[in-house]
Amino acid sequence: MRARSALVLFVAGVAAAAGCTSGGNFTFLGYTTEPPFDPDIRSVYLPVFKNIAFHTNPHRGIEVDLTEAIVRELANRKSPIRVVSDPDRADTELVGTIVSLSKNIMNRDRANYSRETELVLTVEVIWRDLRSGRGLNERGNLPTPPPEPFDPSLPAAPPPPPKATLTPVRVVTTGRFLPELGESSTTGQQKAVTEMARKIVDLMEKPWGKCNP
Image (cartoon, rainbow, N blue to C red; front, top):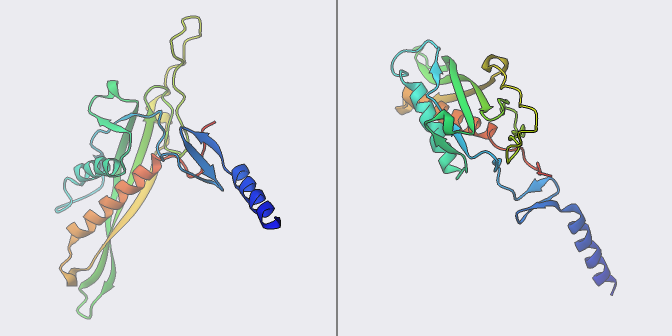
């Protein structure tokens, strides 16, 4: 009888700790079964990133590779955010600039040739809600959609802030390659680009444990 009472108390404690149910999802001890992306954001306009970093072959076109990698990362995570080519049909806009691309030799052999090198990629990104003009770079900084249906008695919404007022987030990744194993600068670029796409899409997710009221 005492064991049964303890079991009942344990179940009650678990039920009390779990909460914030929404759409069949629940949270427990800071974790949630809700999807990691904000369901209010359904689309993103993703122009090809700018590239203002000094670069030579084989890194020409890295901005295209990075943009395509972000599209693939969103698809691989089964994100509900659809990439569209028309900003007028998008909820949000993701713009980025490659600001630095450099190589660091980490290790040399006795002949002073590189044994281990890393490619360092630095990117600045801004994720903006096109409906409100609000910056969404901060994880969990969710948009405030306009009221629906439109009520003409309400005061007009203020215009979106100028793009220059939004501060970009700087993201840095590295791609290590070993020439002695047949790896090259292209190998390092692929690693850095793949990791950069992963980190940028991480910024588009809601923070763990965040519940919508």
